Image (cartoon, rainbow, N blue to C red):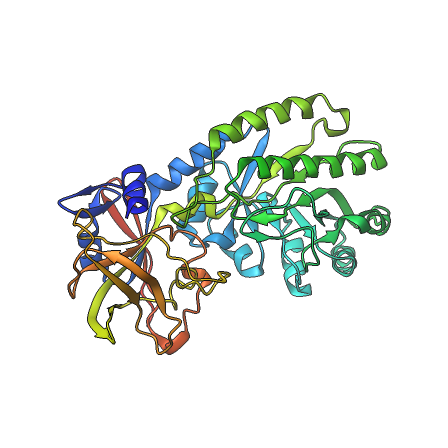
Length: 425
């Protein structure tokens, strides 16, 4: 409960035992839009954007990673603050265009890009495509040749095993992402002479959900060393270096918040070194965060439908579950189930009295939102909230499983609530 109380005091608010989101009692939101639903607080997203912008040197550009939460309202929010967008599919590309993002402010990364996707984004003038393999480079070149316009490309590099970290490593081991650092020269031998591949730079991303600023800075330094080697080969600095995302948020009780002030201090030192390095002069530096910007701004709100005891264990059965929030159930990358911050949203200040499992309505024992969690005495009709649910939640879940209705999404801002996606059938 301490983690929940910290989140409430840091980002949201409460009165009369009840959580407030965007200045609105959560019960009012649930009454108007029904449960289960996702609620996103714009003030939290704004706070996280400002924290990141303050930590990064002004020379760093930010591209929001659409995969974290592709709702158009969220894309527009970061676009309006000067961000670009990083996509991983044609569907995300269409969403980016639909909110008015200029194609040249869009980056396309991810393995297995199809010819149809590549033709679409190239025909629209996408800002940069990140090459994940030699075959993909050849495919991009062939399509660009047909269109008669060179493609702006960067090479995603899978670095060697130093400077690794995070909850999910995405570098330093055999992976479908990018080209191995030890083969980079051979890949560049094929790309650089190709007149339909306009080589821009490198994309280096080695892990996600990183809560240690020193690991992040080490990864940036590693990326810069690789970039300097390539720049030396070219005889001039690269146009772009994309450090990826990786900035984490504290999901679990033992997690420590990423120290953004320390990150700011270290990056200021790093930026001074960059400015004094001729091989990096004028290079555009980029990051593409997702969960860091949106994760803490969302709450998944469910309602208790039933309470039962089976062989001494008490279950709170709610109207939402893993079909809406796979990550909270522990089935999206967790080896051992750990609880997200979960609370009775209408009894925030009540004393925790009983240990329960919070489970959903699906016909599977995997549908568990919280296991062995201590909560206040619960009643049917109480609201159960899962915090840290703004990213990799709704859109990363099996929404069609058992054909339950898809949950709506609600945007709250300065005492007003807006429906930004409707409940499905």
